[in-house]
Length: 252
Ligand code: PGA
Image (cartoon, rainbow, N blue to C red; front, side, top):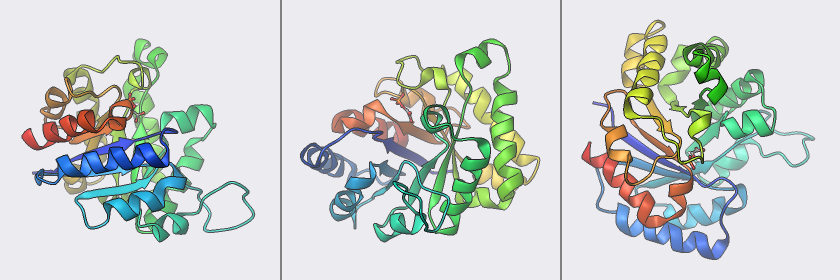
């Protein structure tokens, strides 16, 4: 049985004072939830705050991006070792906002994936199609290309220490969630692609769904056989909403 995982992606939201309220609220509610794993991926400046409030709890923390180099003259960039200095367990890699708004190619995303693993953290590797791609019937092709790229670069073994997040771009921040059946179909496809390389790794691989997961739709999504939890944007910024999604992860 795979354990469910619920990861909050705060994006570029939060301030010290509101983060404290949010994290303390999450901690209070999540303390009794032992059947699943939880994490929040916060903006870089708040990693120290997340570490000091969350260490010793059952909520892990991580970042939303990382640079692929160990160090160097890369103004404004953050190295993997800087994240491990603050106890990060997870790094979101290849989010569609990074791929789209910041022009991260498959090559860059793959290098970041490797750099994250090398530093001992788990990449949450995001794949997903745009609305135009879905409407032209090439969802599987798009996801396969993103997956193949990282598989050929890192090898299937690397996936035993990684998480995949299927996030249809048209569902992110739009309130338009993929139906459980739509999401399940792509999750099963992803697991099938990995199984062609290694069936054991495919079976134990954690595949999250992301894209407008809310308190009122999480349970039916998480009940699908190949959906192992969620990557949560907007709803991770409100403690009660995030907690309701965490509870849905335990129930299914
Ligand atoms: P959303 O974001 O839950 O606000 O749609 C998900 C994500 O971008 O990871």
